[in-house]
Length: 411
Image 1 (cartoon, one colour):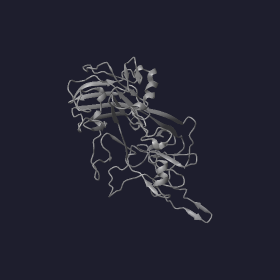
Image 2: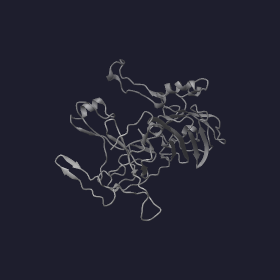
Image 3: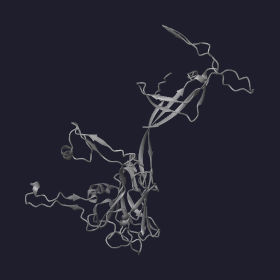
Image 4: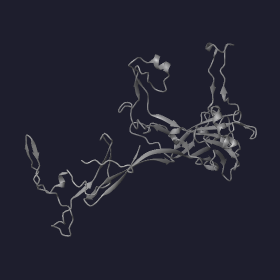
């Protein structure tokens, strides 16, 4: 089998930038991602073993039963390398597991778009409380304190003020401080959008009892969201911010979008932009209320870069015109060969089958040596087969023909 090395201009590596769409519909404590229905399986109530609106990492354990098929689980054996799961701390890894013990994880790993709501009185930070006047003693610390996700974004928001002053965490000009105003925070994990949310692609629609009452877009592609719905009471005003690289939407719109009310947080309130997607928040209404009259549609595009390699494989003229396929020789040709302790001689009189078509039924046309290209193998520098390309139908190859096959492979 002949091998043909690629020339310098036969191989190209490119980066393909794609913009996959994300469409999340939220209603009544549930969400639907890209209109994907919940399909029941033979062993589980959901073949993806996730709730609607969630993404299953690796898509393992599809319609599997714990009793019949068994679940796929990640595992690691504790040894001297001290390599364990990222979710396990070093102290627990050292004390909770014996040397040589197999430690199991669980699949599927799932991710979902989430919503957090901060009222004007919700603390953005919780300082550690001390039971001793000497802070240096750990025994005197009652708790370690905490920082909210909103407050953790303070430096990030201030960083983007060179784009637009609305990104200021605290602004006297705008008379607004994220530390003491009601804020809705939507978190979009990177598995949904890739390297970046596409600037200008965000489109938020607010529905009340099935009718649209507002719509928000980043019309200037600078991360500032404006209400663009003509009949909305807040039309033309800034209702929030988009952090495209970090995957967060900060919603501050407080204008009532309808005189009607719904159960968003404690008690009832009018629909407002800061309540967008509130029914998937951990603080939905009082006494189990779930904003039954409101629904929300989040539409955006992600940014994903795919590396691909393009190869041009050439079948030259006058070459690749012989085949070891048994059908290459004429029917009835003797395939016997003579052999001896020091030699092996094949029958040199085997005829090649003439497959040239003719205008008549019985005779054939003038003989032309013909083969068909059905597979193209790609080898590395060590002559290891790493890929096989197959055309949709075998390509007819004669001695007077040359072909160049364009092969593309994502890497």
